[in-house]
Amino acid sequence: MRRIQTLGLGAGALLVLILAGGVSAQRGGQVRQLPPVSMTCPMHPDVIESRPGNCPVCRMSLVPVRLDTSWICPIHTHTTSDKAGSCPICGRPLVEARVAVTYTCSAQPGIDRLDPGTCPDGSPTVARRTLRPHGNHNPQHGGQFFMAADNWHHVEGTYPRAGVFRLYVYDDYARPLSAANLRKVAARVVTEERYDAKTRTTTDIKSFPLRPSRDAAYLEARVTGAALPSEMTAKIKIKPESPEYRFDFTFAAVTREPPRATVAAARSTSTNRPSSAGANPAAALTASPDPAAQGALPAATPIPETMPEILAHLNARNVEIRNLIRDGNFAAVWVPAFQAKDLAVALEPHIGHLSPAAREAAEPALQRLVRFAWLLDAFGDLGNRQQVEDAYAAFARAASDVAKAFGGTP
Image (tube, rainbow, N blue to C red; front, side):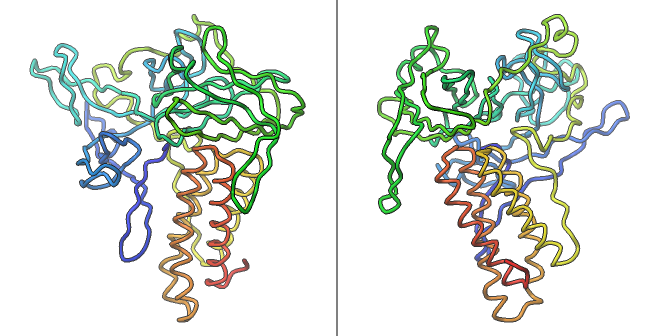
C-alpha cells in the first residue's frame, strides 16, 4: 500500500486515521520539522499505526519508524537526493518514494537510531534514508504500475509500439525479478473475454502468451486487433504454486520511456550518497510529501463550513472517482477516495442536527462510505477492474445514502 493509514473499529464506527505532524529538531539555531514517529509491522510494512500495539495481520509487536519521502532513481534505488534531478548513473528523472529515516555514525558502522543525536566520538549523527518495501510505486518504463495481491510483487504494463504488450515484474522494492525467476512466470495477455455475471467468472476469447525477452528483462506478447484506445488484461502466475493474478490495463496511446538526461548533467543535479543530509542530521527533512507523488499522502482536504457545501464536495469526489475508473486510471483513485473519506468524517458532527430517522440512516452510511473509500484505495493498487468497479458501486451507493440522510441530492 502507498498510504500511511490504519483501520480500527471504535464505538461501532470504522475510522481511517491519517498520521500528521511530527517533532522538531534544532541544529545551528534552525528548527526543522522531522517526520512523525509511526508504528509499523516488521513483517507487513504497509501496516502503519499511530500508537503501539500488535499487527492486525500477524500479531507481531509493532515497531517505531519515521517515514518521509525522498527523491530516488526508479532503476537505481540506492541513488537518493533531497531534491528533484536526474540519476547520475542512467540519467532518468528522479521520482519521489517513501523512505524510513534513521540516524547513523559515519565512523562507527552498526549504529542506527530513530532520533538525531551525538556519536560516541562526539560527532553529530548523519541522517540516512532507506527505501521502504512498497515505497516506490513509480512506473519505470512509462506504463501502468500495480501491486500483486500477494502484497509482495509488482507489475508494470506497457504498450511500447503497435501490436506489442510488454510486462515488467518487480519485487517489493520495485526491483526487477532475476532472469531465473522471471522465466518461472506463466502469463498471458487477454484482449477479449466473456464475463458471466451469475458465476462471476470470465472466459478468455482472445489471448496471447507472454514470453521472456532474450535478456529476460520483461515478458512480451504480439497482439492483434488491438486498436487504440485499448483495454488489455494480464493474467499472471508469478510462481508455479501461486494463484493467478489479474491486472487490467487501459492504453490511450503508445507508452513512452521516460526521457533521460545526459549523465554529466545528471551528476550536477543529484547524488548517490546514502544520505543527502551531510553533517547536519536534520537536513533534507524539510520537504513535505507531494500529493501527486506515489508513496505520498494527499494534501489535507479543505473542509467547507456548511453541510450543503460538504455534500457538494463529496459529490464532486464521487464523480472524479467514477471518471478515473472509466479511464482505467486506477492508481490515481486513492486521492479523491481519501478526500471523500475526509469529507465523510467532517459530516459526523452534523448527525446530531438530523431527525431521528435521518440520524439512524446517516451513521451507517458514513461508516460504509469510509470503508469503501479505503477499499477503493486497496483495489486501485491491485489493478483489477472488476474489484475496483465493485468497490465503487458500493461506495456510490453509500454516497447516495449519505446525501439522502443529510438532505442533499443523491
